[in-house]
Amino acid sequence: MDPKTIEKSLAERASKVLMSTYAQTPIALERGEGCRVWDREGKSYLDFLGGIAVTALGHSHPAVTAALREQAGKILHSSNLYYIEPQIALAEQLVRHSFADRVFFCNSGTEANEAAIKLVRRYATERFGPEKRTILCMENSFHGRTMGSLSATGQGKFQKGFEPLLPGFAFAPFNDLAALDRIWDATVAAVLLEPVQGEGGICVPAPDYLREVKKRCRERQALLVLDEVQTGMGRTGTLLAHEQFGVTPDVLTLAKALGNGLPIGALLATAEAAGAFTPGAHAATFGGNHLVTAVAGKVLEIIGAPEFLSRVKQVGAYFRQGLQTLVEAFPQVREARGLGLLLGLALDVPGKPVVEACLERGFLINCTQDTVLRFAPPLIITEAEIDPLLLTLQDIFTEMSL
Image 1 (tube, rainbow, N blue to C red):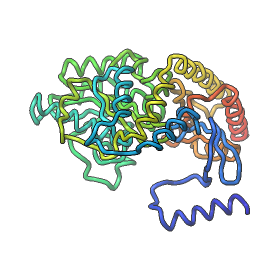
Image 2 (tube, rainbow, N blue to C red):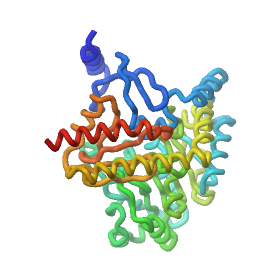
Image 3 (tube, rainbow, N blue to C red):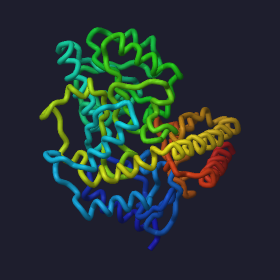
Image 4 (cartoon, one colour):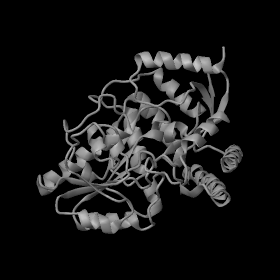
């Protein structure tokens, strides 16, 4: 049977039973190994999206698979009503590798951000009173799809039709300290931002921006909350992206690559900030169960190794330089952006045709903000795997120029 017929059949089946919440690419992937995946007809693709920065160790990583199988043979879930040893061990790892003193586990990035919103609101209310409740967020940000995290997201296209949003959020342009100062008032309890905006177009701030935001938080009795759902877990070349900006937050959120494909999110905080959560204040039925924390512990062990992170920086620099050559060669390619292996290529034309052309030629990428190609491959990607994509992009842009 023709592959297109098969995918059309799947699309028809899906349309009859699934809610239409995704504009899906017309392929169905059924297996993967390393940085390569295969569809149902055996066509292979080099994966430069990694499940949107999720499969940091690639597909079917043997150590991850072994950890999953071993834990699945013991116990999957028991409830947070009881102690869970793999969960405690993972929290110990996260504390050891970060600024944090305490960890709360949930199932996703949006849940982690929802927990962060609740934590800082309670912290500020208990210490300063109910009038201190505003959370300053950034325009063009993305923090999730639940009502709290959606209300904190600075992109109207995600919010349309879901009004009224939750009150208590204000927005400033990213990387603009003067604008931040103009809207900052006595009600501000926290600043919530991404060290590098992902869905916003792979936007990297000025070197001193995060330090200046942290300084203002300290002076004005507000908490700094960093959303590292996409930038964390080695994606930018350090375990946590904020390490490269010389600043530590009070609260931080993780997800995506922490489970390498299993659903897990984490809220990290200093002991002072974490003290606002007491028994019954927040919970997650599946959060941090035996299976996901056992696997995440192995993922963190691998990614957290200095030699692994050093390699991410090295390969990321190689990839970035290759993208820069495209900027210099083609007028429709405006800018190469990003840190480590979270990279973007800003175009002066819509990016969707480029994404489709890459798919046809065996490469998975995507586009954000309509004109920014996003690359978030497994962190184990090699120069030998990057080169074919660069050559393919060169061919595509050449054809577009004709």
